Image (tube, rainbow over all chains, first blue to last red; front, side, top):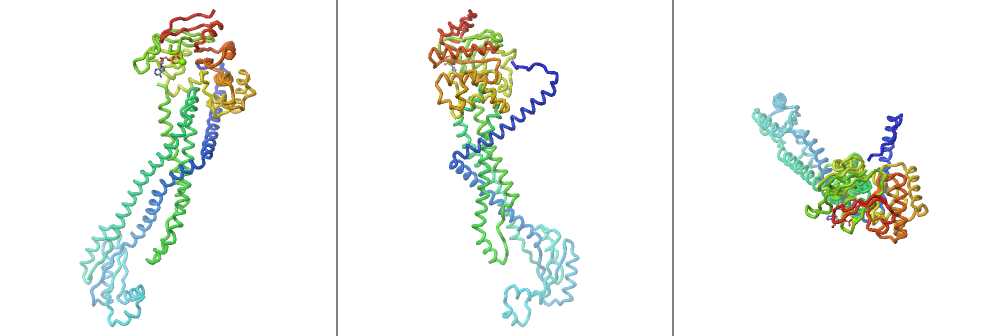
Length: 324
Length: 222
Ligand SMILES: Nc1ncnc2c1ncn2[C@@H]1O[C@H](COP(=O)(O)OP(=O)(O)O)[C@@H](O)[C@H]1O
Ligand SMILES: [Mg+2]
Protein backbone atom coordinates (compact mmCIF):
# COMPACT_ATOMS: atom_id res chain seq x y z
CA UNK A 1 0.00 0.00 0.00
CA UNK A 2 2.98 2.25 0.25
CA UNK A 3 2.38 5.16 -2.09
CA UNK A 4 5.65 5.13 -3.93
CA UNK A 5 6.38 8.50 -5.40
CA UNK A 6 6.99 8.32 -9.14
CA UNK A 7 10.58 7.44 -9.91
CA UNK A 8 12.71 10.54 -10.19
CA UNK A 9 15.93 10.89 -12.07
CA UNK A 10 17.70 12.25 -8.99
CA UNK A 11 16.59 9.50 -6.63
CA UNK A 12 19.58 9.65 -4.33
CA UNK A 13 19.23 13.35 -3.80
CA UNK A 14 15.52 13.21 -3.08
CA UNK A 15 16.25 10.41 -0.62
CA UNK A 16 18.69 12.64 1.17
CA UNK A 17 16.38 15.65 1.29
CA UNK A 18 13.64 13.40 2.61
CA UNK A 19 15.78 12.08 5.43
CA UNK A 20 17.08 15.53 6.37
CA UNK A 21 13.53 16.84 6.42
CA UNK A 22 12.53 13.89 8.59
CA UNK A 23 15.40 14.76 10.92
CA UNK A 24 14.27 18.37 11.04
CA UNK A 25 10.75 17.23 11.83
CA UNK A 26 12.14 15.09 14.62
CA UNK A 27 14.11 18.00 16.05
CA UNK A 28 11.07 20.23 15.75
CA UNK A 29 9.00 17.74 17.70
CA UNK A 30 11.64 17.53 20.42
CA UNK A 31 11.69 21.29 20.75
CA UNK A 32 7.90 21.53 20.74
CA UNK A 33 7.51 18.75 23.31
CA UNK A 34 10.18 20.09 25.68
CA UNK A 35 8.44 23.47 25.68
CA UNK A 36 4.97 21.96 25.83
CA UNK A 37 5.82 19.76 28.81
CA UNK A 38 7.47 22.68 30.61
CA UNK A 39 4.32 24.72 29.98
CA UNK A 40 2.16 21.94 31.40
CA UNK A 41 4.33 21.85 34.52
CA UNK A 42 3.97 25.59 34.95
CA UNK A 43 0.22 25.40 34.49
CA UNK A 44 0.01 23.47 37.77
CA UNK A 45 2.81 25.20 39.67
CA UNK A 46 1.92 23.95 43.13
CA UNK A 47 1.55 20.31 42.11
CA UNK A 48 4.79 20.49 40.12
CA UNK A 49 6.61 22.12 43.00
CA UNK A 50 5.42 19.44 45.41
CA UNK A 51 6.64 16.69 43.09
CA UNK A 52 9.99 18.40 42.72
CA UNK A 53 10.23 18.90 46.46
CA UNK A 54 9.58 15.21 47.04
CA UNK A 55 12.38 14.43 44.58
CA UNK A 56 14.67 16.96 46.25
CA UNK A 57 14.09 15.49 49.70
CA UNK A 58 14.84 12.03 48.39
CA UNK A 59 18.10 13.31 46.90
CA UNK A 60 19.33 15.44 49.79
CA UNK A 61 20.04 12.67 52.28
CA UNK A 62 22.27 10.47 50.11
CA UNK A 63 23.95 13.55 48.65
CA UNK A 64 24.74 14.93 52.11
CA UNK A 65 26.11 11.59 53.26
CA UNK A 66 28.19 11.35 50.13
CA UNK A 67 29.61 14.81 50.82
CA UNK A 68 30.44 13.87 54.39
CA UNK A 69 32.23 10.75 53.18
CA UNK A 70 34.13 12.74 50.64
CA UNK A 71 35.57 14.94 53.36
CA UNK A 72 36.23 11.84 55.49
CA UNK A 73 38.28 10.43 52.63
CA UNK A 74 40.35 13.61 52.56
CA UNK A 75 40.87 13.28 56.29
CA UNK A 76 41.85 9.66 55.82
CA UNK A 77 44.54 10.58 53.32
CA UNK A 78 46.00 13.01 55.84
CA UNK A 79 45.86 10.39 58.55
CA UNK A 80 47.80 7.97 56.40
CA UNK A 81 50.66 10.41 56.43
CA UNK A 82 50.44 10.76 60.17
CA UNK A 83 50.60 7.01 60.76
CA UNK A 84 53.83 7.34 62.72
CA UNK A 85 55.38 5.35 65.57
CA UNK A 86 56.99 6.84 68.61
CA UNK A 87 59.99 4.97 69.98
CA UNK A 88 60.66 5.87 73.63
CA UNK A 89 64.24 5.29 74.75
CA UNK A 90 65.16 3.95 78.15
CA UNK A 91 65.93 6.40 80.96
CA UNK A 92 69.51 7.30 81.49
CA UNK A 93 70.50 7.18 77.86
CA UNK A 94 72.69 10.12 76.94
CA UNK A 95 72.57 12.14 73.77
CA UNK A 96 75.39 10.29 72.02
CA UNK A 97 73.75 6.92 72.69
CA UNK A 98 70.39 8.31 71.56
CA UNK A 99 72.02 9.43 68.31
CA UNK A 100 73.39 5.91 67.69
CA UNK A 101 70.02 4.32 68.38
CA UNK A 102 68.41 6.80 66.00
CA UNK A 103 70.85 5.71 63.29
CA UNK A 104 70.05 2.06 63.99
CA UNK A 105 66.33 2.73 63.76
CA UNK A 106 66.79 4.68 60.55
CA UNK A 107 68.71 1.74 59.06
CA UNK A 108 65.87 -0.63 59.88
CA UNK A 109 63.96 -2.01 56.91
CA UNK A 110 60.55 -0.40 56.45
CA UNK A 111 61.54 2.93 57.98
CA UNK A 112 61.12 5.94 55.74
CA UNK A 113 62.66 8.57 58.01
CA UNK A 114 63.14 9.37 61.66
CA UNK A 115 63.29 12.36 63.92
CA UNK A 116 65.12 12.30 67.21
CA UNK A 117 63.54 14.31 70.02
CA UNK A 118 65.80 14.74 73.00
CA UNK A 119 64.25 14.73 76.45
CA UNK A 120 64.77 18.50 76.68
CA UNK A 121 63.03 19.13 73.37
CA UNK A 122 60.25 16.80 74.42
CA UNK A 123 59.79 18.77 77.59
CA UNK A 124 59.71 22.07 75.76
CA UNK A 125 57.07 20.78 73.39
CA UNK A 126 55.06 19.37 76.22
CA UNK A 127 55.11 22.60 78.14
CA UNK A 128 54.14 24.58 75.13
CA UNK A 129 51.27 22.29 74.25
CA UNK A 130 49.82 22.39 77.73
CA UNK A 131 50.69 25.97 78.59
CA UNK A 132 52.10 24.74 81.89
CA UNK A 133 55.44 26.51 81.81
CA UNK A 134 55.49 27.41 85.45
CA UNK A 135 54.35 24.15 87.02
CA UNK A 136 56.83 21.98 85.12
CA UNK A 137 59.53 24.58 85.18
CA UNK A 138 59.82 23.93 88.84
CA UNK A 139 60.54 20.22 88.45
CA UNK A 140 64.13 19.33 89.23
CA UNK A 141 64.48 16.39 86.88
CA UNK A 142 63.14 16.13 83.42
CA UNK A 143 60.88 13.08 83.65
CA UNK A 144 60.53 12.69 79.88
CA UNK A 145 62.68 10.16 78.03
CA UNK A 146 64.21 10.93 74.66
CA UNK A 147 62.11 9.62 71.80
CA UNK A 148 62.34 8.94 68.09
CA UNK A 149 59.42 9.61 65.76
CA UNK A 150 59.43 7.01 62.97
CA UNK A 151 57.63 7.42 59.67
CA UNK A 152 57.08 3.97 58.17
CA UNK A 153 57.33 3.25 54.46
CA UNK A 154 54.05 1.34 54.48
CA UNK A 155 51.28 2.97 56.57
CA UNK A 156 49.09 -0.18 56.52
CA UNK A 157 48.25 -1.24 60.10
CA UNK A 158 49.73 -4.72 59.69
CA UNK A 159 53.08 -3.45 58.40
CA UNK A 160 53.26 -0.78 61.09
CA UNK A 161 52.57 -3.33 63.80
CA UNK A 162 55.29 -5.60 62.44
CA UNK A 163 57.78 -2.74 62.32
CA UNK A 164 56.91 -1.85 65.92
CA UNK A 165 57.79 -5.38 67.01
CA UNK A 166 61.15 -5.17 65.24
CA UNK A 167 62.01 -1.81 66.80
CA UNK A 168 61.09 -3.01 70.29
CA UNK A 169 63.93 -5.56 70.16
CA UNK A 170 66.61 -2.90 69.67
CA UNK A 171 68.69 -2.29 72.80
CA UNK A 172 68.04 1.00 74.54
CA UNK A 173 64.43 1.04 73.40
CA UNK A 174 62.00 1.11 76.24
CA UNK A 175 58.68 1.15 74.45
CA UNK A 176 57.19 1.62 71.01
CA UNK A 177 53.82 3.32 70.81
CA UNK A 178 51.54 3.28 67.87
CA UNK A 179 48.06 4.72 67.67
CA UNK A 180 46.46 2.33 65.24
CA UNK A 181 43.29 1.31 67.00
CA UNK A 182 41.41 4.54 66.51
CA UNK A 183 42.77 4.87 63.00
CA UNK A 184 41.37 1.44 62.18
CA UNK A 185 38.10 2.28 63.83
CA UNK A 186 37.83 5.42 61.75
CA UNK A 187 38.49 3.42 58.63
CA UNK A 188 35.79 0.91 59.46
CA UNK A 189 33.40 3.76 60.11
CA UNK A 190 34.22 5.30 56.76
CA UNK A 191 33.63 1.95 55.05
CA UNK A 192 30.33 1.60 56.87
CA UNK A 193 29.40 5.13 55.89
CA UNK A 194 30.18 4.61 52.23
CA UNK A 195 28.13 1.42 52.12
CA UNK A 196 25.31 3.22 53.87
CA UNK A 197 25.52 6.06 51.36
CA UNK A 198 25.38 3.60 48.48
CA UNK A 199 22.40 1.75 49.95
CA UNK A 200 20.61 5.02 50.68
CA UNK A 201 21.46 6.30 47.22
CA UNK A 202 19.94 3.23 45.59
CA UNK A 203 16.93 3.29 47.88
CA UNK A 204 16.22 6.98 47.46
CA UNK A 205 16.96 6.77 43.74
CA UNK A 206 14.16 4.19 43.58
CA UNK A 207 12.10 6.67 45.57
CA UNK A 208 12.66 9.30 42.88
CA UNK A 209 11.66 6.79 40.20
CA UNK A 210 8.46 6.06 42.10
CA UNK A 211 7.60 9.71 42.65
CA UNK A 212 8.15 10.63 39.01
CA UNK A 213 6.59 7.37 37.78
CA UNK A 214 3.45 8.00 39.75
CA UNK A 215 3.16 11.62 38.64
CA UNK A 216 3.66 10.64 35.01
CA UNK A 217 1.22 7.76 35.34
CA UNK A 218 -1.45 10.27 36.36
CA UNK A 219 -0.50 12.55 33.47
CA UNK A 220 -0.74 9.61 31.05
CA UNK A 221 -4.10 8.66 32.56
CA UNK A 222 -5.43 12.19 32.01
CA UNK A 223 -4.25 12.19 28.40
CA UNK A 224 -5.34 8.66 27.64
CA UNK A 225 -7.77 9.61 24.90
CA UNK A 226 -5.12 11.72 23.19
CA UNK A 227 -2.63 8.86 23.30
CA UNK A 228 -5.12 6.41 21.86
CA UNK A 229 -6.06 8.79 19.07
CA UNK A 230 -2.51 9.59 18.03
CA UNK A 231 -1.62 5.90 18.07
CA UNK A 232 -4.64 5.18 15.88
CA UNK A 233 -3.42 7.65 13.30
CA UNK A 234 0.10 6.29 13.23
CA UNK A 235 2.15 7.81 16.03
CA UNK A 236 5.17 5.75 16.98
CA UNK A 237 5.82 4.84 20.59
CA UNK A 238 8.71 7.28 20.64
CA UNK A 239 6.36 10.08 19.56
CA UNK A 240 3.87 9.23 22.30
CA UNK A 241 6.56 8.90 24.95
CA UNK A 242 8.40 12.09 24.12
CA UNK A 243 6.29 14.71 25.97
CA UNK A 244 6.18 12.53 29.07
CA UNK A 245 9.92 11.89 29.01
CA UNK A 246 10.46 15.62 28.90
CA UNK A 247 8.05 16.11 31.81
CA UNK A 248 9.96 13.49 33.79
CA UNK A 249 13.28 15.13 32.96
CA UNK A 250 11.93 18.55 33.97
CA UNK A 251 10.68 17.16 37.28
CA UNK A 252 14.07 15.57 37.85
CA UNK A 253 15.95 18.74 36.97
CA UNK A 254 13.69 20.85 39.19
CA UNK A 255 14.09 18.36 42.03
CA UNK A 256 17.86 18.38 41.57
CA UNK A 257 17.99 22.19 41.67
CA UNK A 258 15.91 22.22 44.83
CA UNK A 259 18.20 19.57 46.34
CA UNK A 260 21.25 21.75 45.56
CA UNK A 261 19.49 24.65 47.25
CA UNK A 262 18.61 22.56 50.30
CA UNK A 263 22.19 21.33 50.60
CA UNK A 264 23.44 24.93 50.44
CA UNK A 265 20.97 25.97 53.13
CA UNK A 266 21.96 23.03 55.31
CA UNK A 267 25.59 23.98 54.88
CA UNK A 268 24.93 27.52 56.09
CA UNK A 269 22.75 26.29 58.92
CA UNK A 270 25.47 23.96 60.23
CA UNK A 271 28.59 25.93 59.34
CA UNK A 272 28.81 28.01 62.54
CA UNK A 273 28.42 25.20 65.10
CA UNK A 274 30.70 22.89 63.11
CA UNK A 275 33.56 25.36 62.86
CA UNK A 276 33.11 26.23 66.55
CA UNK A 277 33.29 22.53 67.39
CA UNK A 278 36.39 22.09 65.25
CA UNK A 279 38.01 25.13 66.85
CA UNK A 280 37.48 23.62 70.29
CA UNK A 281 39.66 20.72 69.13
CA UNK A 282 42.24 23.21 67.84
CA UNK A 283 41.45 22.26 64.27
CA UNK A 284 40.09 24.17 61.34
CA UNK A 285 37.41 22.24 59.56
CA UNK A 286 34.77 23.59 57.25
CA UNK A 287 31.78 21.66 55.97
CA UNK A 288 32.27 20.29 52.48
CA UNK A 289 30.43 22.08 49.70
CA UNK A 290 28.89 20.51 46.63
CA UNK A 291 30.91 22.67 44.24
CA UNK A 292 30.19 23.04 40.53
CA UNK A 293 31.18 19.47 39.65
CA UNK A 294 29.14 17.94 42.43
CA UNK A 295 26.13 20.09 41.52
CA UNK A 296 26.42 19.08 37.88
CA UNK A 297 26.58 15.41 38.86
CA UNK A 298 23.56 15.76 41.12
CA UNK A 299 21.55 17.56 38.44
CA UNK A 300 22.51 15.02 35.81
CA UNK A 301 21.55 12.11 38.06
CA UNK A 302 18.23 13.66 39.06
CA UNK A 303 17.35 14.52 35.46
CA UNK A 304 18.20 11.02 34.31
CA UNK A 305 16.19 9.51 37.15
CA UNK A 306 13.19 11.66 36.24
CA UNK A 307 13.52 10.65 32.61
CA UNK A 308 13.80 6.97 33.53
CA UNK A 309 10.81 7.11 35.87
CA UNK A 310 8.73 8.63 33.09
CA UNK A 311 9.97 6.05 30.61
CA UNK A 312 8.90 3.20 32.85
CA UNK A 313 5.49 4.74 33.51
CA UNK A 314 4.71 5.47 29.83
CA UNK A 315 6.04 2.17 28.59
CA UNK A 316 3.80 0.26 30.95
CA UNK A 317 0.86 2.20 29.58
CA UNK A 318 1.84 1.71 25.95
CA UNK A 319 2.01 -2.04 26.49
CA UNK A 320 -1.67 -1.87 27.47
CA UNK A 321 -2.70 0.22 24.49
CA UNK A 322 -0.96 -1.90 21.86
CA UNK A 323 -3.55 -3.95 20.00
CA UNK A 324 -2.98 -7.69 20.10
CA UNK B 1 -6.62 -3.14 -2.19
CA UNK B 2 -8.16 -5.18 0.61
CA UNK B 3 -8.29 -8.95 0.61
CA UNK B 4 -9.80 -11.08 3.38
CA UNK B 5 -9.00 -14.81 3.18
CA UNK B 6 -11.00 -17.10 5.50
CA UNK B 7 -10.75 -14.55 8.26
CA UNK B 8 -12.12 -15.42 11.69
CA UNK B 9 -12.01 -13.43 14.88
CA UNK B 10 -12.79 -14.75 18.32
CA UNK B 11 -12.82 -12.60 21.42
CA UNK B 12 -11.65 -14.24 24.59
CA UNK B 13 -11.14 -17.55 22.85
CA UNK B 14 -14.86 -18.41 22.69
CA UNK B 15 -17.07 -15.72 21.21
CA UNK B 16 -16.91 -15.73 17.43
CA UNK B 17 -17.31 -12.11 16.23
CA UNK B 18 -16.32 -12.93 12.65
CA UNK B 19 -16.29 -16.29 10.90
CA UNK B 20 -14.82 -17.30 7.58
CA UNK B 21 -14.91 -13.89 5.91
CA UNK B 22 -13.79 -13.80 2.28
CA UNK B 23 -13.93 -10.72 0.07
CA UNK B 24 -11.83 -8.46 -2.07
CA UNK B 25 -12.06 -4.70 -2.52
CA UNK B 26 -10.42 -3.22 -5.60
CA UNK B 27 -8.34 -0.10 -5.56
CA UNK B 28 -10.59 2.97 -6.01
CA UNK B 29 -13.78 1.19 -4.97
CA UNK B 30 -16.35 2.52 -2.53
CA UNK B 31 -17.92 -0.14 -0.33
CA UNK B 32 -20.51 -0.13 2.43
CA UNK B 33 -20.33 -2.61 5.24
CA UNK B 34 -23.70 -3.16 6.83
CA UNK B 35 -25.53 -5.34 9.31
CA UNK B 36 -27.27 -5.07 12.66
CA UNK B 37 -25.52 -3.83 15.72
CA UNK B 38 -23.18 -6.57 16.89
CA UNK B 39 -22.88 -8.11 13.42
CA UNK B 40 -19.12 -7.53 13.40
CA UNK B 41 -18.71 -4.38 11.30
CA UNK B 42 -16.42 -2.61 13.74
CA UNK B 43 -14.44 -5.79 14.34
CA UNK B 44 -13.80 -6.09 10.61
CA UNK B 45 -12.58 -2.50 10.34
CA UNK B 46 -10.42 -2.95 13.42
CA UNK B 47 -8.71 -5.88 11.73
CA UNK B 48 -7.79 -3.64 8.79
CA UNK B 49 -6.49 -0.94 11.15
CA UNK B 50 -4.45 -3.59 13.00
CA UNK B 51 -6.22 -2.74 16.23
CA UNK B 52 -7.01 -6.45 16.38
CA UNK B 53 -5.33 -9.47 14.86
CA UNK B 54 -7.42 -12.19 13.20
CA UNK B 55 -7.58 -15.53 15.00
CA UNK B 56 -7.89 -17.30 11.62
CA UNK B 57 -7.04 -16.48 8.02
CA UNK B 58 -5.15 -13.57 6.53
CA UNK B 59 -5.83 -9.92 5.79
CA UNK B 60 -3.92 -8.41 2.88
CA UNK B 61 -3.81 -4.68 2.24
CA UNK B 62 -2.18 -3.43 -0.94
CA UNK B 63 -0.76 -6.90 -1.45
CA UNK B 64 0.91 -7.15 1.95
CA UNK B 65 -0.08 -9.64 4.61
CA UNK B 66 -0.55 -7.17 7.45
CA UNK B 67 -0.40 -9.97 10.00
CA UNK B 68 3.31 -10.21 9.25
CA UNK B 69 4.06 -6.58 10.00
CA UNK B 70 6.51 -6.12 12.83
CA UNK B 71 5.01 -4.08 15.70
CA UNK B 72 7.48 -1.29 14.97
CA UNK B 73 6.11 -1.03 11.41
CA UNK B 74 2.49 -0.77 12.50
CA UNK B 75 2.51 3.04 13.00
CA UNK B 76 3.87 3.54 9.49
CA UNK B 77 1.21 1.21 8.09
CA UNK B 78 -1.52 3.15 9.89
CA UNK B 79 -0.31 6.44 8.45
CA UNK B 80 -1.45 5.26 5.07
CA UNK B 81 -5.04 4.76 6.19
CA UNK B 82 -7.46 7.56 7.02
CA UNK B 83 -9.94 6.64 9.72
CA UNK B 84 -13.22 8.33 10.67
CA UNK B 85 -14.91 7.32 13.91
CA UNK B 86 -18.53 7.55 14.93
CA UNK B 87 -17.59 9.62 17.97
CA UNK B 88 -15.01 11.48 15.82
CA UNK B 89 -12.28 11.22 18.52
CA UNK B 90 -11.22 14.85 18.36
CA UNK B 91 -8.85 16.16 21.01
CA UNK B 92 -10.95 18.47 23.16
CA UNK B 93 -8.12 20.77 24.22
CA UNK B 94 -6.90 21.57 20.70
CA UNK B 95 -8.32 23.87 18.10
CA UNK B 96 -9.87 22.50 14.93
CA UNK B 97 -6.72 23.47 13.07
CA UNK B 98 -4.47 21.54 15.43
CA UNK B 99 -6.76 18.53 15.44
CA UNK B 100 -6.55 18.29 11.68
CA UNK B 101 -2.80 18.94 11.78
CA UNK B 102 -2.19 15.99 14.10
CA UNK B 103 -1.40 13.36 11.44
CA UNK B 104 1.06 15.77 9.81
CA UNK B 105 2.66 16.56 13.16
CA UNK B 106 3.16 12.84 13.69
CA UNK B 107 4.86 12.62 10.32
CA UNK B 108 7.07 15.61 11.07
CA UNK B 109 5.78 17.63 8.14
CA UNK B 110 7.28 21.10 7.99
CA UNK B 111 4.84 23.58 9.65
CA UNK B 112 4.19 25.83 6.66
CA UNK B 113 3.51 22.89 4.39
CA UNK B 114 1.33 21.39 7.14
CA UNK B 115 -0.68 24.58 7.51
CA UNK B 116 -1.27 24.66 3.77
CA UNK B 117 -2.54 21.08 3.75
CA UNK B 118 -4.67 21.55 6.87
CA UNK B 119 -6.40 24.56 5.31
CA UNK B 120 -6.97 22.65 2.09
CA UNK B 121 -8.58 19.77 4.02
CA UNK B 122 -10.71 22.14 6.12
CA UNK B 123 -11.75 23.96 2.97
CA UNK B 124 -12.82 20.67 1.43
CA UNK B 125 -15.18 19.94 4.33
CA UNK B 126 -16.38 23.56 4.42
CA UNK B 127 -14.95 24.48 7.84
CA UNK B 128 -12.06 26.75 6.97
CA UNK B 129 -13.70 29.63 8.83
CA UNK B 130 -13.80 27.62 12.07
CA UNK B 131 -10.12 26.66 12.26
CA UNK B 132 -9.54 28.50 15.54
CA UNK B 133 -12.58 27.03 17.29
CA UNK B 134 -12.41 24.22 19.84
CA UNK B 135 -14.29 20.99 19.01
CA UNK B 136 -16.85 21.66 21.75
CA UNK B 137 -17.93 24.86 20.00
CA UNK B 138 -18.99 22.90 16.91
CA UNK B 139 -22.20 21.00 16.13
CA UNK B 140 -22.17 17.22 15.78
CA UNK B 141 -22.15 17.38 12.01
CA UNK B 142 -19.32 19.90 11.99
CA UNK B 143 -17.28 17.80 14.41
CA UNK B 144 -17.70 14.82 12.13
CA UNK B 145 -16.47 16.89 9.20
CA UNK B 146 -13.40 17.87 11.20
CA UNK B 147 -12.84 14.14 11.80
CA UNK B 148 -13.03 13.59 8.05
CA UNK B 149 -10.62 16.45 7.36
CA UNK B 150 -8.15 14.87 9.79
CA UNK B 151 -8.57 11.48 8.08
CA UNK B 152 -7.84 12.87 4.60
CA UNK B 153 -5.19 15.50 5.37
CA UNK B 154 -2.49 12.91 4.66
CA UNK B 155 -4.10 12.02 1.33
CA UNK B 156 -4.47 8.36 2.32
CA UNK B 157 -5.09 5.76 -0.37
CA UNK B 158 -7.56 4.00 1.91
CA UNK B 159 -10.28 5.70 3.92
CA UNK B 160 -12.19 3.75 6.59
CA UNK B 161 -15.23 5.05 8.43
CA UNK B 162 -17.10 3.38 11.27
CA UNK B 163 -20.69 4.65 11.51
CA UNK B 164 -19.68 8.16 10.46
CA UNK B 165 -23.31 9.29 10.40
CA UNK B 166 -24.45 7.41 13.48
CA UNK B 167 -25.59 10.44 15.44
CA UNK B 168 -26.60 12.75 12.59
CA UNK B 169 -29.94 13.64 11.05
CA UNK B 170 -30.69 12.47 7.47
CA UNK B 171 -29.69 15.70 5.74
CA UNK B 172 -26.31 15.92 7.55
CA UNK B 173 -25.76 12.21 6.92
CA UNK B 174 -26.31 12.72 3.21
CA UNK B 175 -23.82 15.61 3.22
CA UNK B 176 -21.20 13.48 4.94
CA UNK B 177 -21.69 10.62 2.50
CA UNK B 178 -21.38 13.07 -0.39
CA UNK B 179 -18.00 14.07 1.02
CA UNK B 180 -16.86 10.45 1.03
CA UNK B 181 -18.04 10.11 -2.56
CA UNK B 182 -15.93 13.14 -3.47
CA UNK B 183 -12.84 11.52 -2.04
CA UNK B 184 -13.67 8.28 -3.79
CA UNK B 185 -14.00 10.13 -7.08
CA UNK B 186 -10.38 11.28 -6.85
CA UNK B 187 -9.19 7.71 -6.44
CA UNK B 188 -9.35 6.98 -2.71
CA UNK B 189 -10.59 3.53 -1.77
CA UNK B 190 -13.42 4.03 0.73
CA UNK B 191 -14.98 1.53 3.12
CA UNK B 192 -17.84 2.69 5.35
CA UNK B 193 -19.55 0.69 8.08
CA UNK B 194 -23.13 1.84 8.56
CA UNK B 195 -26.54 0.49 9.50
CA UNK B 196 -28.39 3.34 7.81
CA UNK B 197 -29.96 1.06 5.19
CA UNK B 198 -32.11 3.72 3.55
CA UNK B 199 -29.15 5.99 2.92
CA UNK B 200 -26.98 3.15 1.66
CA UNK B 201 -29.70 2.00 -0.74
CA UNK B 202 -29.92 5.48 -2.24
CA UNK B 203 -26.20 5.77 -2.84
CA UNK B 204 -25.88 2.70 -5.08
CA UNK B 205 -22.44 1.49 -4.14
CA UNK B 206 -21.27 -2.03 -3.45
CA UNK B 207 -22.63 -3.39 -0.13
CA UNK B 208 -21.17 -6.15 2.07
CA UNK B 209 -23.79 -7.50 4.47
CA UNK B 210 -22.80 -9.09 7.76
CA UNK B 211 -25.00 -11.10 10.09
CA UNK B 212 -23.70 -12.57 13.31
CA UNK B 213 -20.17 -12.44 12.07
CA UNK B 214 -20.81 -14.02 8.68
CA UNK B 215 -20.77 -12.39 5.28
CA UNK B 216 -24.28 -13.11 4.00
CA UNK B 217 -24.37 -10.94 0.90
CA UNK B 218 -22.04 -9.06 -1.44
CA UNK B 219 -24.15 -6.78 -3.60
CA UNK B 220 -22.34 -5.15 -6.47
CA UNK B 221 -22.85 -1.47 -7.18
CA UNK B 222 -26.08 -0.82 -9.03
N1 LIG C 1 -13.03 -6.25 22.41
C1 LIG C 1 -14.06 -7.10 22.42
N2 LIG C 1 -14.09 -8.11 23.32
C2 LIG C 1 -15.12 -8.97 23.33
N3 LIG C 1 -16.14 -8.95 22.49
C3 LIG C 1 -16.17 -7.97 21.56
C4 LIG C 1 -15.13 -7.00 21.48
N4 LIG C 1 -15.41 -6.16 20.45
C5 LIG C 1 -16.58 -6.60 19.94
N5 LIG C 1 -17.04 -7.68 20.59
C6 LIG C 1 -18.25 -8.43 20.27
O1 LIG C 1 -18.18 -8.82 18.92
C7 LIG C 1 -19.45 -8.67 18.30
C8 LIG C 1 -19.28 -7.78 17.10
O2 LIG C 1 -19.06 -6.47 17.57
P1 LIG C 1 -18.80 -5.25 16.58
O3 LIG C 1 -17.74 -5.66 15.66
O4 LIG C 1 -18.59 -4.06 17.41
O5 LIG C 1 -20.17 -5.16 15.81
P2 LIG C 1 -20.84 -3.92 15.09
O6 LIG C 1 -19.81 -2.89 14.90
O7 LIG C 1 -21.38 -4.49 13.84
O8 LIG C 1 -21.94 -3.46 16.00
C9 LIG C 1 -20.39 -8.10 19.34
O9 LIG C 1 -21.20 -9.16 19.83
C10 LIG C 1 -19.49 -7.57 20.39
O10 LIG C 1 -20.08 -7.73 21.66
MG1 LIG D 1 -19.70 -0.91 15.60
